[in-house]
Image (cartoon, rainbow, N blue to C red; front, side, top):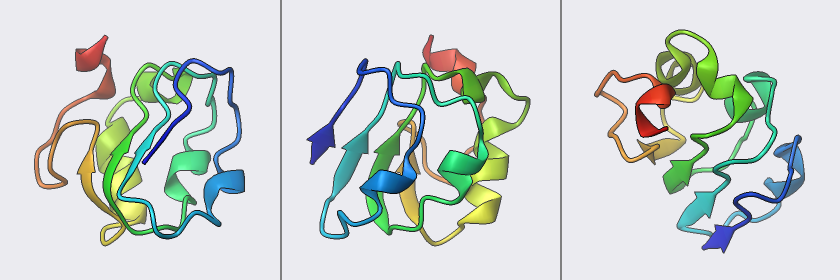
Length: 90
């Protein structure tokens, strides 16, 4: 697990080399571009990014999961088939 919540992170691609993690926590950072989540090319049982500006985009979870349907088993405390906006966490 890696927890870098609240560290002002804007780019997630630097974490792609961490392929053996089970959980990545990136909450409350400054990820503005939803493409950072979409392009995070790692298979994770759990990814949490709520509290970032990119989460304010409508249907944030659907877009992130649609781009990487096999990558995230749980995204922001919800299973991929569940549809919920990231803002519900805030």
